[in-house]
Image (cartoon, rainbow, N blue to C red; front, side, top):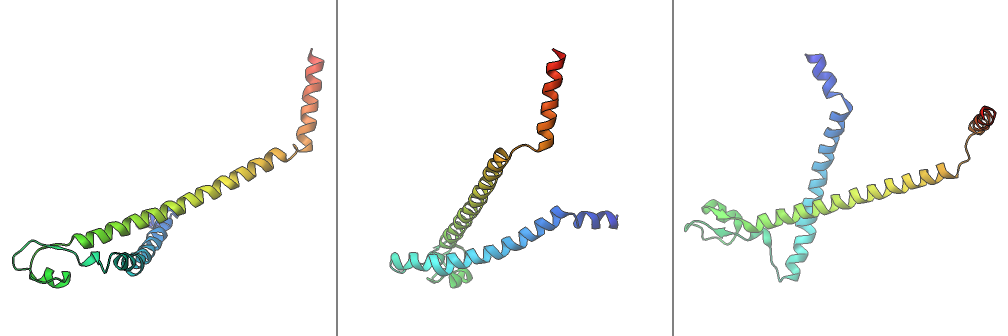
Amino acid sequence: MWKEFRDFAMRGNVIDLAIGVIIGAAFGKIIDSLVNDVIMPVIGAVTGGLDFSNYFTPLSHNVTSHVLVDAKRQGAVLAWGNFATIVLNFLIVAFVLFLVVRAINMLQQQVLHQKTQEAAAAPPPRQEVLLEEIRDLLAKQAK
């Protein structure tokens, strides 16, 4: 059983998946930083200091703070601003991945088109030409 598990774990697809997950986690941190440190401050500056991550609706009468961290300690809150930030984060990740996949697909199409053109432009090998001539001669003799 151990050998079977080892074979499964060392199979190429599992290793590729593990690498993808690790790169995805690192990419997620980059996107989090992009959203929290670049995009949201710009949105805040354009909207007059609006900070979505600190917007919430108190669900308890005990909540008196205007800061989300303190309000969560005081009672239940609906942190919709934080949710909006996470949704924006997701949309940015999805859009960047769309652009990456689109670029890869375009490159693959260019390579395929180039290979097709090279195959069409290349003359057939000498052996094939001779075989075609022999085939044609045999067809004439058979008539």
